[in-house]
Amino acid sequence: MAETIKMLINGEWVESSSGEYFDSINPATGEVVARVPRATREDADRGVRAAYEAQKKWRRVPAPHRAEVLFRVARILEQRKEELARKLTQEMGKVIAEARGDLQEAIDMSYFAAGEGRRMHGMTAPVEMPNKFTMSVRDPVGVVAVITPWNFPTAIPSWKMMPALVAGNAVVFKPASDTPLLAYELVRALNDAGAPPGVVNIIYGSGSVVGDALLEHPLVNLVTFTGSSDVGRHVAEVAGRHLKRVSLELGGKNAITIMDDADLDLAVEGVLWSAFGTTGQRCTACSRVIVHEKVKKAFLDRLIPRVEALRLGNGLDPNTDVGPLVNASQLKTVDEYVQIGIKEGAKLLTGGHPVTDGELARGFFYAPTVFETTPDMRIAQEEIFGPVLSVITVKDLDEAIEVNNGVAYGLSSSIYTQDINKAFKAMRDLTTGIVYVNAGTIGAEIHMPFGGTRNTGNGHREAGHTLLDNVTEWKTIYVDFSGRLQKAQIDNPVSTL
Image (tube, rainbow, N blue to C red; front, side):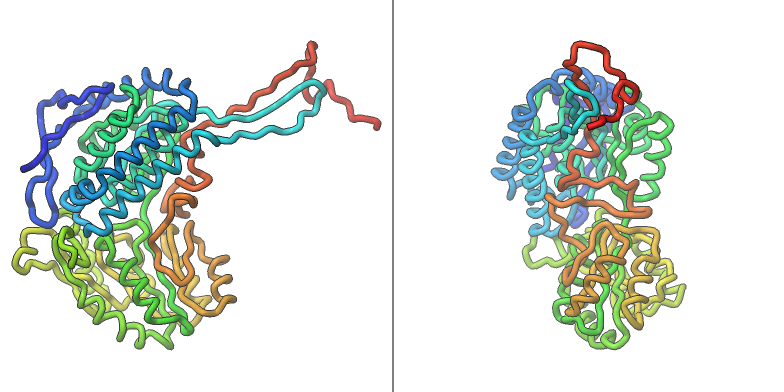
């Protein structure tokens, strides 16, 4: 039976002022998972104003005590991990093992961000005058609007909210409309862990209504967004007109390069996982393979049978390898790109069609698809966000690097080689934010920076030692204990010693 969930505003679980609801749908079965209040601009305003008032007190709570809330969140998620993983699979569609991984990432981030409650380091430096001291410290930015996608409904929000909260900010969270139930469960964990009223608020609804209301609200100080590059441009344009800080994590067109000395069996495993894990619905998914001409045939002879053996189905079935696409619109988009590839002359090696056999007809399933393409074809240039892989042939490493870098995105890349010189050349010359050697393009860990170049974002990084950079301001402090006015750059003649 479908759950009916509510919004959290100022510590109270409430309905939308519109009184309207929308349904969250299981993409594998078409069943309704949750009934969700459809928020209005007025609801968004209430959430922001609650966050604004709550943040005034929250920023004064000592950081180690703010961190205690995050430690408790991590423990709550650990205790409920299996239950929430099953809900995640039902709402988003990814296979159950990956759903557990999604939850584990949120647990890891909660613990990691909580650790900053006893670090959050600033710095000191020498000063140019006697009897004077200087230091820099981090200050919270204020109210943070968190707008997230559906493909990692607990992991991605945790990457944004946990650092923001431990730094002393308050949050208004607008999750994707395809995965509101898991967003509700994450906020519920924060509320149960003792986040004070108004420090965390959740509002459900469309980007054009709730999202734009947050982008335009005068009390929102930072907008952190993960999603497509097209929507990211809109976020930057609207928020930029209001001089808001904006952190964007956007699309990818990631490639695995396979050199002629690669371990082909290992490379096939990496391609299968990176291209078809999460049904290709990751910003780090491999959607291009750049393979040396000497080993292309041997590689494809290994790859294609493995692709055709992948089992589609409900992600709750432990035998399922590939779940559904998230909704009918995404299914249509993937099929449109496949047709574009065929019209452009790409060679279809396998797949290329929706799957509607038996119970799969109830969901949004697409056959894992592999093309041979040239680097300039649209399916080899544009983000598809589905189980579609382009295989591109090159003559050497220099050409492979040129092809890898010759797209509008720069998130993740990978090279398979047993030559250390080739590996280091690739590490130097692949112009992506993440580079893997002898591994696929997915698998980022929360204690390292995450982000990309070019149209993948606006240069910011999340997680790792950059964890607090997006959610804090630097404040420089000077303390003069000389007892007199000292004029910097004027009252400090060069010493004659």
